[in-house]
Image (tube, rainbow, N blue to C red; front, side):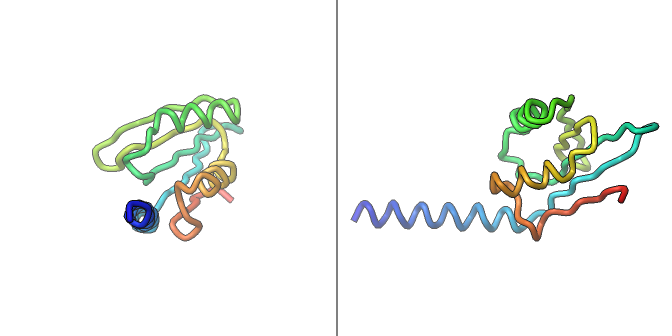
Length: 109
């Protein structure tokens, strides 16, 4: 009986996480600064995530600088130095933080 209740709870949790993932769009934007310099922004991630920790992981993996910005209109945005759009997309999909349908890349190409 306890195992069935636990299994139902886990299924409900998985469904709610999946519904939350599909409900919001995640935008990855690449902006050119000057010359060959770029800034990549990630916006629209689930607010329950630890953005500072994700930013640090991006910095550690790709050797770039990054910051977390909180704005009233855009919400929480992660900014990274460099063009990391494809790497961020792969990371978000691998870690189940977003689905292919709700990911949008706004790139220069």
